[in-house]
Amino acid sequence: MSPTNALRVIESIVDDLDMALNSELMDTKDTDGRFIGRYLVLSKLGSGAAGVSFAAYDPRRDCKVSLELIDDQEASRSSVWRRHLQEAQVLTQLDHPNILAVHELGVHEDQRFMATELSADRTMRRWLRGAGQPRTWREILAVFTAAGRGLAAARRQGLVHRCFGPDEVLVGKGGRIRVRAAGFTIARAELDREFRFNFCAALFEALHGRRPKPGDHGGELPRDSKVPAWLHAAVLRGLAPDPSERYGDMGELLAALEPPSPVADWCVKLSLATLATGALGLAVGLAMNLL
Image (cartoon, rainbow, N blue to C red; front, side):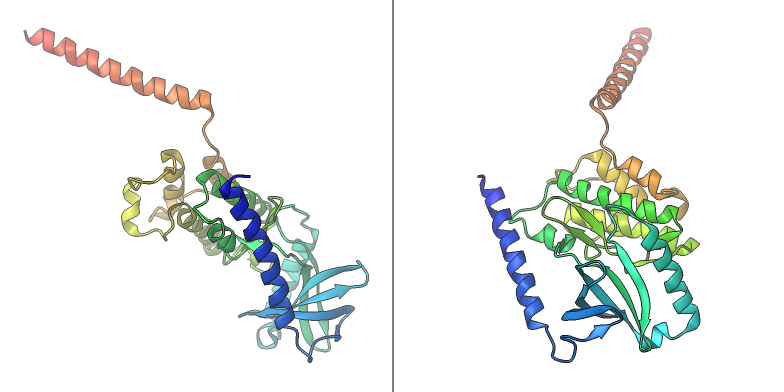
């Protein structure tokens, strides 16, 4: 086993232990054994701006789920709740391998909740940092392309991801890539443009180890970068200051992220060589005429 592979095996074991420890530490007496709807709450997973999430058992499916309690003040507004219902209805019907499954959106004793698939996978942020050395551009591109396919499928159903980033993508041990469901919302024009920009910004950061800045639009690669020029250019187009110069949809963006075939690459090189030869011949001809 190579040192790199050994590091990744150790990293995987540490991740498993870390998740088990965190889950055990965050168990609370107030929730352990409580039912929310048909779901038996097992342990607290965490909390955020949207609300608190728990690991729970679903007796109907005979499996563990993630139960997110939606913030009461936000969800109590009828317009917000209708939007949540519409989003959940689409997500429950959207069976895609690159999107974390949504089981149900419901209400229990005035408490609104969302039940989703429970995943032990690590976030892309942890995956990027946990290799012991930088991930290759091919590894990074494979993860983003898979996540992009999930985003494209959701967009075809009228949803966009409002907060896409490295914490919103889960990377499984077997290479399974899934986008968290909680970030999807009904598509609007400004969000449609924004989520593709966020996707390219996250990809740029993953490839180069830093966030993009205005000066990057010159198109020059860092001297020590191993990222191919075609990929760097594709990402920069998605970050163009003028929105009209960016990709029109997720399908176009994903197509631009496909590596050029060897034949296409050879044709490009041949074309450049032909142009260079032609330019040289023209220069020689002009020089001869001047003599």
